[in-house]
Image 1 (tube, rainbow, N blue to C red):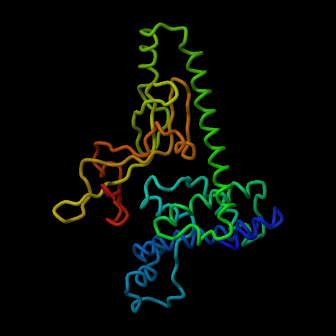
Image 2 (cartoon, rainbow, N blue to C red):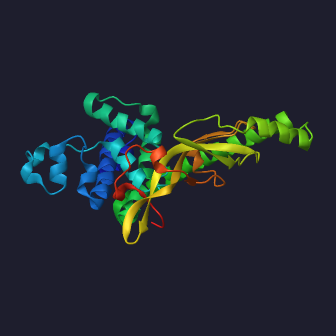
Length: 295
């Protein structure tokens, strides 16, 4: 990562190298966390020889040099699953970094206008992983710690401003729509228009809107919950976890994506639902990859 930061401070003409090195360093760090849990978590699950090496059965496989591992985005997806609620950027935030890293490596092309945004998203992704690995941030970032802090603080500030702007706009629209109605009339109308979600993903759940107080809907993907029962790890048969990826309120038209959800503290980071995991999850994750109560 030092190579990435060194290139970044050289200015825009070196940002291609900064993005390239940042992408590689981030991928290696994510894989270090996964491999620390089990080496099988970083290999391509469709490549059997790689799985054999990762599980200590390499004598039955081809050369170790032929092992196939996952890329940056897949490593991110696996880490997010293992650290729910701790990674402050979305897959959508990371994808441009992955594309830029590949673009620089293969064709020396990347979107220079987005260099700082991509680079800072990378720094924000790295921070919680360093904490999990118990790596001292001061030693990891070295002389670039101050730069790291300023870049991250500025991006977070911009996102908070954007989130607050969404709330102000939504409250204004709500007042325009319903301010002239009597409370009774307004309640009848709101009950009708907020009864069903306007966004659909794996599952939706009703949540109070942080802008207008009406019933909004949180949408996201469903994950199994692993619990300890009599000393054994098993899947909770009656409850699942909704991992939010978006929110929408039909009353005030507040719509929030993954990036800004983090800045609306009134919205939950996860929602436990009474449901059978088999209704939503075809292939349940292995025990190491699940969501643990109290973890």
